[in-house]
Length: 614
Image (tube, rainbow, N blue to C red; front, side, top):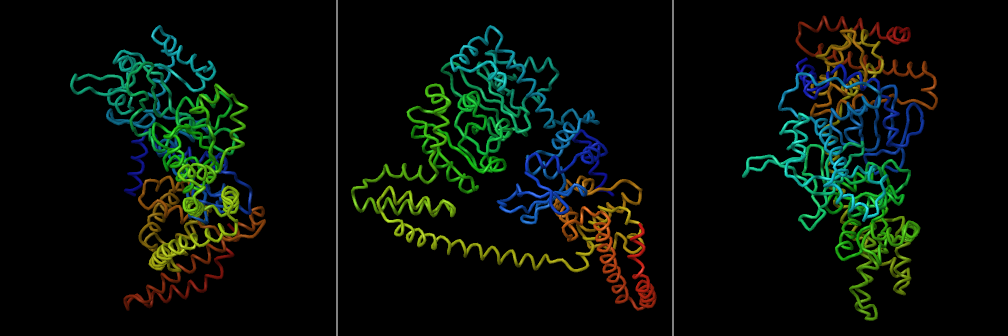
């Protein structure tokens, strides 16, 4: 009960009453929500698709509309609509509620007893949005004319400026600060959002961005999470980004990703700069994105992989750009992205390329983009004199190692053919060498994997569930789906009869809700335990599904009968165990327990018949 009260306080602290949160989840169709991000097809009993949480090739991801849950039989990821949004979109709890409420057309309640010191992510989104509108309006001021002149010089159309939300920060040190102060925003919120900094020496607040062309940075939900600013003179630094905030993470977010994920393209174009992205979007290449003042990170690559399987690297053609491309290839390889490199020569970057050679030629460069291996082969060649036999041998051996390291069995044959064609060495010779080196790599990897499997096997033995515990899990899973079984359940099994830990906690919560006659759903349960350290265990318990045959779900009566039968069998097992334990206890209880057990054995034949009448 205490945990339930604490949970309610947490929901209130975030600004939304527990009842409202529960209603938002109840009104959300989990198939429709997940279907926006994962291609789902109707299967036997549930919708199925490729799991977005691991490198899944066969559909092992199931979404059950009735239970309001998803479960992957591969990586064991499971949960309700809130769990999915938290893990897939990286939203916090309150953001999930806001997203679903907006999607369902539900009005968000006002903050309840909110402390003056409390700042939510929603507050940061709000002040960023206000700042974005302020920067945009500054373009139409006398001071903003130089920003407009720069925009025109870069050949950006009015529609592009509006689409990207470009703006201008005034030169005055506290222009934005004073504007936000008039809007009643607190100093703490302004500093937390990264828009304003406190000058310790002068004892004053000042704007972080001054006299800069402003680029709002959006998350994939279309909310402004931060800004980038470019100087219009020779000031340093040339580009300045928002600092890390509760909503702005440079290693995870990307400029333009909010637009790229909404396109129908099956690839992403990764660039180095904001202007590259904007120029490509204006030219119709809306799948272009850029990292936020850093090299492409593993977190960003992971985010990209959630949406596409192919990436084109369109980096600068200078030495630094080539180095960045090689590092990006390594990260994309680890994430399993098919990687291709677009040649920008004779120009430096996509912005210059589009302005000088146009859309058609950029499309042509995409079609002719080199695979990761072919790019590395061409780049690697510069360091060798291939007319020298020894250097040629070193060159070939180095590329063979790259073929192995790329770990791309589907395209390995193509890489071998490419290397053979460019060196004059027989394919069979190169293939033999690839296999030799690959075997060495594999032997090492197998040893490491075997060690890990051994560790996992030991863990599985330690964690192996007893038959009684498994039956308890089945009972709770089925009652969550068919609450009408609760009256029969409580006759035989009480809260204290469940194994300690997650199972008993779950049973206590379910018994409490059902004893009050309140509505119970799997989503409500997961919503309640959302902040628990062992929250995954509750999802795992509720994700249990009785095996069914093709067509069972279409026959509701048949499906229900299977569930009821499984329930009766599991209750019988748990109750028998309970009575046997009592018979093994104190001498004075043996006779009473034996009588109860004999009575139960006589009644067990009637359980199924009674349940089928429900």
